[in-house]
Image (cartoon, rainbow, N blue to C red):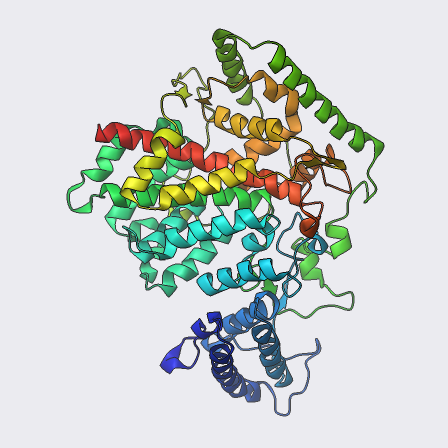
Length: 570
C-alpha cells in the first residue's frame, strides 16, 4: 500500500513515546480497514466462506504487503502496545472475510531451535533496551539481531557500528550506503540482506531503476564492482593500481574518505553474509519466504509448506542424539581440554625457531587449500540477486593455488592495530574506534567455561580459530605456532570454517550439525564457552564461533584493502 496523502506511515511506531505510537497505530488501523472494506464486498457480502475457510485477499494497492508488515510487528516489535494493536488490526481484517498472512518457518534461524532463542516479549531489561534501540533505528527487529543477542555485549557494539555506517554523518549519501550493502550481499547470493537493503534504499529516496541491475546505477558505483568482487573472493589480489583507478576516474572518481567508507561497508556486508548463512538466518516475516497467505491444515502446516522445507518444530530441529550428552561427546570435550593443556606446557618448555614457525605456517596454508566440503546436500534456496553485480562466474579461489605464488601478508609489516586503525580513523572519524572495539569484543568474548567445566582458559582455541581464518587468506603472525591449529581444529571444523568464511552460500544444516556433534553436551553446548545463565541455550557457543568467523574475515579483507590504499598514498 502506498503511503498516499499520509494515510499509512510507519515512522511513528519507532518512537519511544507511547502516545506517538498510539496515534500512529490508530492512523494505520483506519487506513488498513478502509482499504479492506473496499475489497471485502467484491468478494462476498455477507462473507460466505470459501472451501478453505477464508476468502482470498485482493493484492490491490499493496494491501498484502501491509498485512505482512503488521504480522511482523505483531510478532517482532519490542513494544507490547504495537504487538497487540497490530494483532487486533489483522483480526479486524480477518473478520471482513479477507485472509491474513501467517508466519512460515520456526523462529529466526533454520539451524537453531526456536525454543532456544529469545522470545520477543520475554526478554530482560538489558535485552529490551537493545531490542528497542534496534527497532527505533531500523524500524524492525531483524532475525540477525535475535540470533546475535545470545551475546549482548557483542550485539551492542555491532548495532552501534552498523548504525554509524548507515545513518550517521559520513562521506557517502544514505542511498549509496544501502546500494553498496546490496552489491556486497549479492556477491554471496545473500537474498536475505539484499531484501532488507532494497527496502531501506527505497525508504531513503533511492532510485528504483538502480534495482534493475548494476548497469542502471551511476558509473561511480559500477566502478566499485571490481573492488567488491576481489574483496569478497580474492582480497590478496588488490593492489594500489586498483585504488588509483577508483580515485582518478575524472568525474566518476571517489575521494579517499568516500572510498574508505565504501570499503568498510563492503567488508561489513561480506562478513555479515557469512553470519547469515552460517547461522541459517530465516527470511524476515514480512519478506518473501517469511509468510504465506495459504491457510494452515489441521496438522498446522499445509502440504505447500512441507514441499518448501517447512516442517513441524520437533521434526526440523530433531537432534540425532537427543538432549542427553553422550559419553563420546563428553570425552571429546575433555580430550580437547587435554590438548590445550599439553600445548601450553610445550610452549613453556621450548619455543620453536622462526624458521620452523614459518615452515609450519606454509604447511597449514597449503593444507587449507585442500579443505573442502563433500556435501551433496543443497543449501537453502535463495532468490537470484546476480543483477546487482558483474562477473557472476568470479568466485573464491584458494590462496596461491594452481602454481601462482602470492607473497605472504606478514602482520608484523602491516597490522590493523598499528596501521589500518589509524588510517580508517583519519579518513572516516570514529569508525576505526568502533571497528576496533567490535574486533576486540568478538576475539576476547569468553565465559571461561567449556561444556560442564568451569574456569577454563579458552584463549588458545579462540586464537587458533582466528589465525586459521587469516591463514586461509595468506596472513601470517610471526609469533604464532601454526602447528597448534591441527591439534585443536579437526577436519569437520575446518570444513565448516572455510565454507562459512569463503563460500557462505554453500553452508548447510547438515554441515553445521556434523561439526557441532563432536562437541555435544546438553545437545550442542560445548567447545568454546557456555554462555551466561541468562543465555544458557545450547546454541550460544555456535553463535559465538560464527562471530569469530565474521570478525576475522572482515579484518582480513580490510587489511588487504587498507594496505593497498596506504601504498597508493605513499
